Image 1 (cartoon, rainbow, N blue to C red):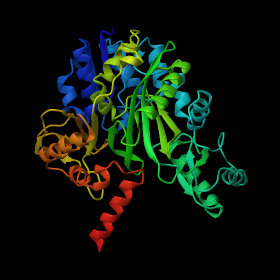
Image 2 (image 1 turned 30 degrees about the horizontal axis):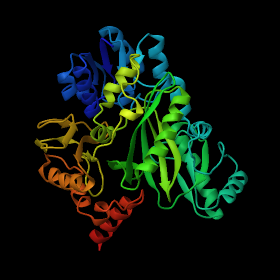
Image 3 (image 1 turned 30 degrees about the vertical axis):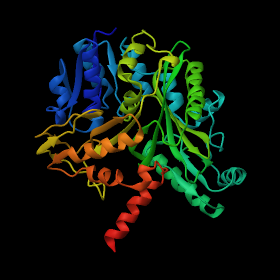
Length: 452
């Protein structure tokens, strides 16, 4: 087991990893920008190192400074959390060159899954169902029209190196295709420095289903069930559930078995999430995230297994602590992402939290690094906390969630708490009857009413 882990992140995920390390008796080092000097994870860590000014490129994305912090403090491993350098193959390679363990997959696996086209090819080779589409990058309009005609309109054009909805355009007719292709390539080039795009069949009312997987790097793989992340705004997840209201045990076992076998065959090490669109009983691969997900707590709630403990164990050479037959699914869990944003316009709302009170009671978990008097800096992601609720079934979970949202108090800034209070009382949400387009349509209706 590791002696000292450096946590290369901030906010709630840094605190989440820190807690896991403390439970395992591992010394902790955190890095921070000058803007995060008063953050909770900095206060609780055994050691802290300031690595630069507020801009991420000068601090949390500064590989040289983070490696230097490892060497100064004697850290023998780095946990990247999510975001920042968590899926940076170069970072993993550099750590390995300095004999520091990256708590995650190899640089090669990060590279494969970070390229959407190569990831799709790899998924197909491993037996994972994929969305019909181009086999590689598409550059010519003539070629794009031929492919689109073959798979049928509507189609979606996606950036190969993309994420967060950038470089994605839908074409419903051949006339739409030219503009969509040019726009997607332009956006992709500007956002990612790579204008490669590919074409896929556009599904009209799919759900977003993802499988939590783990590999030991030596040919063993398991899955921890699925999460339903269909409630999204601008391709950003807002509300996640485990298990999905749309799947039954047979479908779960089938797609879970496929994914577990795939990571085993790949020789994958650590945590990963294989994401799908799901429509009419069929799964279609989107991408694989080679890191811990924001929404991992709902999986922990229904399995009782600490996924960060598991990450550390695998990275240290201890292998997986569970076999597939050991993993049982108990009840239902929902996570709401609480952001420092206006609940209507979603404009960021940095500032000082004057009062912060979290709900409690059976089945309630709040992952947050903020506190009363904490000043939210304007430089980073607006996520300030996650409310995770677990119940014996979905009905109990929803009842408990409603009560927990009523207890949650954040004063001094605007947050998305009012949005979740609205959602928990909606009939479609109560029935689990929603898809990836539902939330944006719901918000658009609200804007129409407000402006009428």
